[in-house]
Amino acid sequence: MAITDLGHTAFACHDLDASIAFYAKLGIHEAFRLLRDDGSVMLVYLHISGDRFLELFPGDPPPGGDQPTSFMHICLVTDDIESLIAVLRSEDIAIDRELKQGLDTNMQVWVSDPDGNAIEFMQLSGGSPQHATATGQDIVESDILKTP
Image (spheres, rainbow, N blue to C red):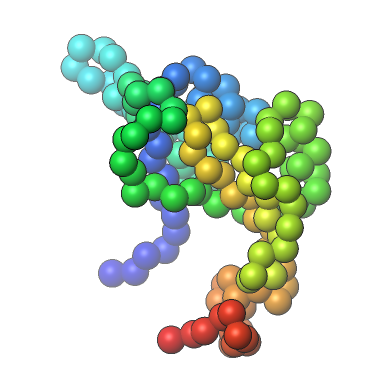
C-alpha cells in the first residue's frame, strides 16, 4: 500500500451555498453531490485539480461555537502567490495572515472560509523540504528542520 495523493479534505459547513460561492471565487467549483434517500444533500464535492477535492457537509452549527474539531487547516498550492493574492483581494476575500516566508522557505498567505476554516495558500520554493522530497533530492537540515 502506498499513499499517492491528497484525495480530499472534508469540512462541515453552516451555509452550504455560501461555502460553494466562496470556493468558486477561488476557482474551485462543484463537481457533484451525494444525496440521502430523502433527496437531501449529504455532501458536495468541489473539484480542485486531477483527483483532488474538497468535501462539504451541510448542517454544521454557526461558526464560532464551542464545537471541538481535529481539523487544523487545508493547504492549497499555487505557482504564483502574488497573482493569487490579487485575485483574493479582487473577490473581497479577507486575508487573515499576510504574505510571508515560512520556516520551510515557502511563501504563504492565509484566509478563512465562511465557516472559519483556515486555508493556507503556499508557493513552493526551490529550496524547501517539500520541493526536495517531491524531486528526490536530499533535504538540507537546519536548526528548525530535522529529518528522521
